[in-house]
Length: 500
Image (cartoon, rainbow, N blue to C red; front, side):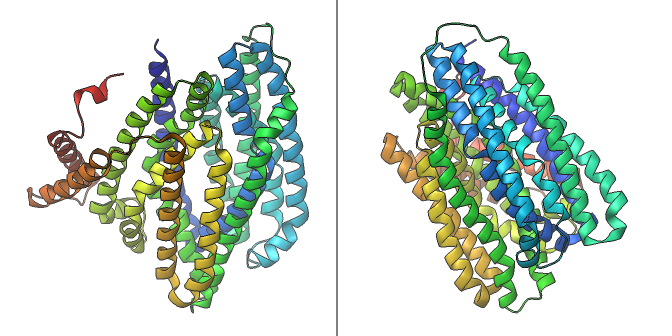
């Protein structure tokens, strides 16, 4: 089987699995939102923003280090080196996981009192802390499977984790819910922690089984600990800064919204609505992009090791063309059908308004995922982190000064500033590194024209009843057909684009 076909097969497998999991996850997210309310969703989002920092500390760049080292050893045929490198990676991840666990346990009283508005007890954060060592080691093993282009095993553990988490959270919510907000958050984090531990055990058994297939051969005498630190340490330091700023940003949002005149409950509720309901919805189709973007890291790392620069140029052209065409298509769907989609999924009338307002950011958000993965594959992970840190500093500054006077409108402005800055700077750095050809006509102008003309064509066609799920699906399908036909008419899609 050709290498590109293996790449596509792995990408399709990840996409189908991720799409299934995200569909189930989004449905479950709707169930949780309707069950616990927007204020509880907001509190849970704040808990997860704190937890995300400890995840960053626990993983400390080990996923990328494992992916890059295993990819390089594989490229040179040093399979014994893969085994030795992974032992070091797992020890490193376990050590950092334990450090982050103890840190979260120690700081949970302060975090709950000052950052979570005293709304919940320390138990949810303390329970989450025990998942961190397991999560860190899972991250290292996922990097291993990604480098070996054997994503089936990572996929299986993700499926197990997702279904187990939903089952446990549903059981715990039904048991704890009568006790109030604190108990609801406790149910969510307890289900998440237990499912994370189960996922690790499954992944570890699969890793032990897969490791036996590696041949015992000659290998380069390498200091793998030094190599892990060389890759992960710059990532870790910048990740700490980025994640810390990200956590500060999320905590500041409801605090600054309160200063605009909102009550604490209402500010947390609006924050929960945007971050816990709107953003998961518009990022849901990004599953297609993310599944392939993760696979780009070992592919570009491999091509760089082999100095296959011509292959890189071809890859750039195909990857960006497909990504831009897809992103504009999704933008069109959310722009044209925001009301219908929001009504079908959520029961909050304000959701549709925020979906439509944030829809234009879809193209930049989706493309940024691709660009970041390519830069990481080219060993430019520090640049990626630097861009993210710049984005966060600028965003925090605007949040601090703009939200007290402008409220939710100011926050929408901040989201636009953040995504535009991050997306354009990332693209510029990738162009500076590779000098790839940016095809403005086929990647931007033609998809945008196709989107606008498709929207117009849909408006003059006989209306289909949009009060039902089938009616909405028919209209989206008609929009997709029009969009594809206009792309073909403008020659944005040609025969060679579908050749492997």
